[in-house]
Image 1 (cartoon, rainbow, N blue to C red):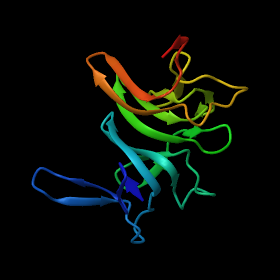
Image 2: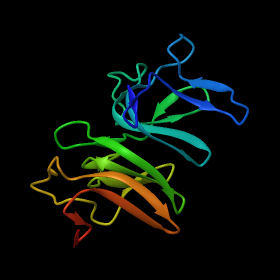
Image 3: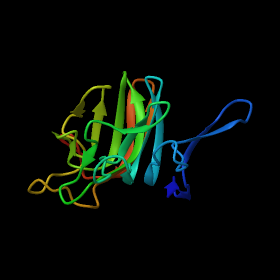
Image 4: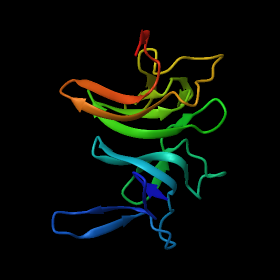
Length: 171
């Protein structure tokens, strides 16, 4: 597993005194979040992890839509997560803006809601952002069109990636 391209076998926290806590270790006490973690973010006081090929052993097939939330004792799926047209899609980055958790990456839906490569989670449901990022081609976004990273600048979200359109505008 990796975090930001660096090998990571788990997700953990470090407090201001340097104490490390592993979240969801595979020690029989709690389920292990497996896959490639590419982003972590705290939203409404809760830790979220996202990436690609994320799975939770306690969830049937294990597939969780590539985003999970830490409850304080276990990792849980987030309302269906994201899905691509030809597979599970992936999430590259997450940021909090205007009371919502914004996720970006390569996907066609978020929680079953049509959303091209960028979506917002309000704690209970997903919504698309404007027309999304990238041109639709018969319902399938080209693999080269994906959001890579984001930054919050005041009340604006800056998105970097390889996409030809943002909403109805050419980029």
